[in-house]
Length: 280
Ligand SMILES: [Zn+2]
Image 1 (cartoon, protein in one colour):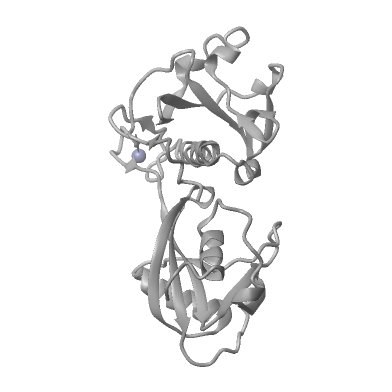
Image 2 (cartoon, rainbow, N blue to C red):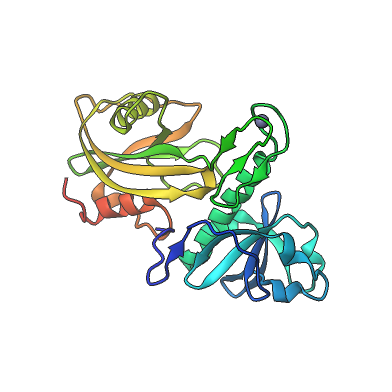
């Protein structure tokens, strides 16, 4: 999965430190990120690549996190693709990058970029927010309001019935791979209750014997995903929630296509069922 980057380590401890020329940075323009693309590889820029054209770029950059001993910063300077060799490409590219640590750097950086951009003003009184020097927090001096990056809990559910797995496809999604039941936890609800409610809403089925598998941070949607296997309880007729799903089918283990994509919890869970790697 994308967050599994061993032997590298992702260090998200907040630090109030100034950038050095050799440090790397992320620059976003809408849903695009500044990179240099090699053959199946993304390169992120370092400040030293931009010293000539943007000598003060590092002075206002915001520290984000580190992977091993490489620190990553965020800049809101725009138009950096004027420097030869660098271009803004879609952040969808993070999903196809083969080296997970590069995907993780880009996707978490993009998540933090959205958070900083969306909280430039206090949501209580409307004044401009300030950056805390001690932690990853924005605060409002006049009214004292504080805000931290928001992470929403979400469940992924693999509904199974003996050798069959319930596979779905989302409506209106650009990629047409199989998916599992998924949904956000509502206020006042446990993850187990979310599992039962989402399965009922999306395919009209009841489930039992929930088995927690693994979790995954999913920066693309500001979520933490909790993956569950759940056994069908009773009637197997699927009633599709047609405004969310275009397909919901029972697929026999031997007919499930192998998962080539290794980035998401969903694909790992489908594959684990397919090869009987999970004991249910
Ligand atoms: Zn305020």
